[in-house]
Length: 412
Image (spheres, rainbow, N blue to C red):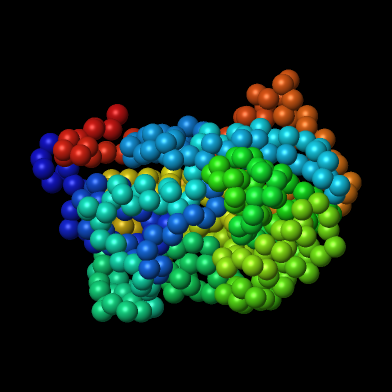
C-alpha cells in the first residue's frame, strides 16, 4: 500500500465548532486520517463538571475501544449506584438498578471531554474563547469569520456546538425551525449534601414535578439537584439566571420532603443549568460544505443517549470522509448510516420527561408499578435489553484505522 493511502484526508482542512464531546471525538478520527483539524470553542477553557453521561451496549463500547479510551473512562467513572423513587411524603416506592440510569459506565461530561482533549491536543489546533460569527461558502471552501480572530478558510465546517448550535443557525436558519419542545423543562445545580448521600440518588415526585438529590463523586458535602417539571414552552432569557431562579421557585413552592432546602440552595447557587427537554429534528444534517454532528443536528436534552450517539456518529462521519473523499458523497453516506440510529434514540428520549415527572398521581403510581416489575429478578434480563436496544441499533463499518506508528489495519 502506498503512503498516500495511509492518510486519505491529507491536505483536507476542517474546522469543528465545539470542544465538549462530539467535536474532540471527531477531531480524534479526522486527525488520524490525516486531516488538518481546528476546534473552536467559545468557552475560555475546557468546561469542567456538567451532568454525568453514560455508555451502554456494543456500539458505544466498540467505538470507545477503537479510540483507546475505554479503560480511561472506567478509571474516571462515577461508580454511581442505584436510585430510589419516592412519593410526596418521601417514602420509598421503587428502586432502580444502577445500569438503568447509569448504563454500563458513567462519567462526568467534563471528565470525558478532558480524555478526548488529552488524546488530540498534540495534533489538533484548539482555539478557546472564540466563536464563529459569519460563514461564506464557495465551490472550493468555507470562509469563516470569528468574533476575535482573523477570518480563515477551510475545506469543511462541522457544527458540534450543541442543542443551541451557532453553526446550525448560520447555515440552516433559526433554531425555532428545528427544536421541538417535548412538554417539560429540566434544571440542575449544586446543594449541600444534607442526606449524606454516597453515589446514589433520591427522586421525589409530585404531580408534574420531580426533584432529585444525588451524589455522584463521593464528596460528603456536595449533592446535585435536578428538577424536571411539566410545562408548555416558556418565554424567558436563558442567560438570565435570576429569571430562571424565579421560574423554578414558583414551580416548586409549597412542596414537601427536601424541596424547601433545595430551593434555599437554588437561591445561593451561582451556576444553574436550565433548558427545555427538547429535540432537534432536521430533514438533512448537511448542506454544502457544512455538516452537523451530535446535539447540533439531532440532539435530545435527556434520555436519548446523546453522548453515546455523538461518539458513534463522529466515528461514522470521519470514516465516510476517509472512504469517499468527496464531501458530498461522504455526507450523504454519513446521514444514511446514522439516520435510523438517531431516530431510535430520539424515540427513546420522547418518554424521558414523562418517566421522571408523570403529570398525575395515578400516572406516578402506574410508573412505579411498571418499574418495580421490570426491576424484579424475573424481569431483569428484559430490563437490561430494553436499556440497550436503541444504543445498539446500528451496524458499525470497519473503516480503515491508523495506528500510532502509521500502520494500517485493513478493513475486512
